[in-house]
Amino acid sequence: MSWRASVLTLFPDMFPGPLGQSLAGKALAEAIWSLDVTDIRDFGTGKHRKVDDTPFGGGAGMVMRPDVVDAAVASVADGRPLVYLTPRGRRFTQADAQRFAAGEGCILVCGRYEGLDERVIEARAMQEISIGDYVLSGGELAALVLLDATVRLLPGVMGAAESAEDESFSAGLLEYPHYTRPAEWAGKSVPDVLLSGNHAAVAAWRHAASEQITLRRRPDLWAARSSHS
Image 1 (cartoon, rainbow, N blue to C red):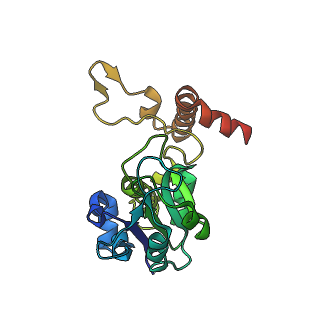
Image 2 (cartoon, rainbow, N blue to C red):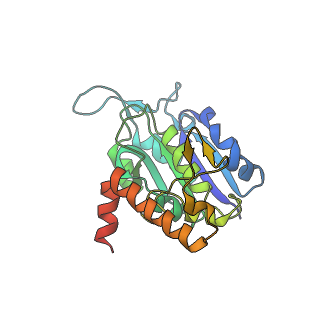
Image 3 (cartoon, rainbow, N blue to C red):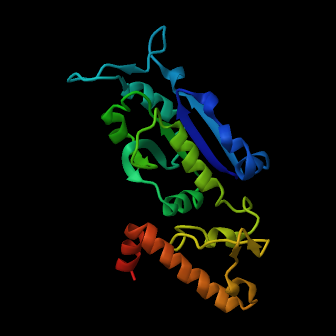
């Protein structure tokens, strides 16, 4: 059985979007994973299929109704992790991508307006996940990011398994610099160690470079890694 992603959204035409291209698109065509998209508006109320209403207590914007969202979730719920993409969620990490990839798939709920009624989030025990400290117009782009990061880790998607092992965040470090031909370009040369053929020396250089870049650019990652060492 292929890895299955279900997306609940008010804008189904946004999918598969970029996921239909490159590695994810090829894997989708080869049935390594599958994608089904549910239009939340199909579960809307009344003649106009209403999905939102004004917030109790006042305030700007509209809130997505709990009964509508719950009905949409019920149509696909089968025990897979249920994720609500929201700026207030826990930050999405490479470890999350690995965790989702190791399972049977996931269900992603894309909010709009001011978000979902809190009661459906609690009733469905949704995992709240954010892709960064900024606000988007809706959860669709965040869902695409989460799926791309996860799908590429599925067996058979990437050409070389070791590619994922050396990437940024896989060992709590940012990735080392890469170089290719020509060996000299614009007055800059490739580090000698990479031309030496000494695999142990190359590995040591790459690890040291990863540490230096992480310490300089992401002291938060360095501190977290150091606290667990």
